Image (tube, rainbow, N blue to C red; front, side, top):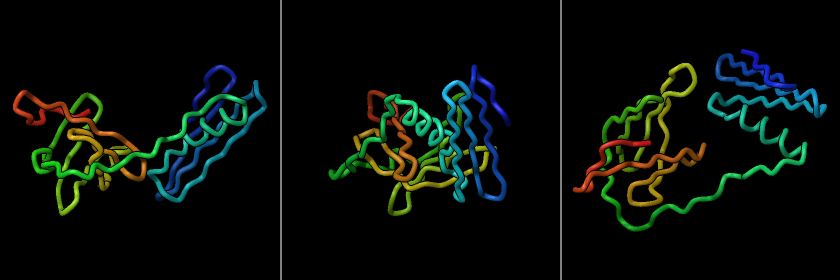
Length: 143
């Protein structure tokens, strides 16, 4: 799939677990190519960030997060949650996991870590999952 915006041409591709993203910014004479043999790598974000750095734009790096040390009752979060964008499934097998659909709807299971009472982060891709809770503290949705 090629994308044309202003003076930028980009293309994402994948095959058998390998992903790539080509980014050409004609007005800034910049080409960035990201290749990965891990199909969940955010190659498009990597390309956009690298192009921004090359062209003098400020790029925010992912901030480190601290895993919550105090005990959090994790079993109350177990279940399936849906919104207009995705369906999430939270499970517990000695550590919490989230199963999420990635590109083309393929399901991936990742370990998550609590960072607040109702907030979790994925360690590899740094996605954040925030649970909305009712007055009794029971989760009703997840963003």
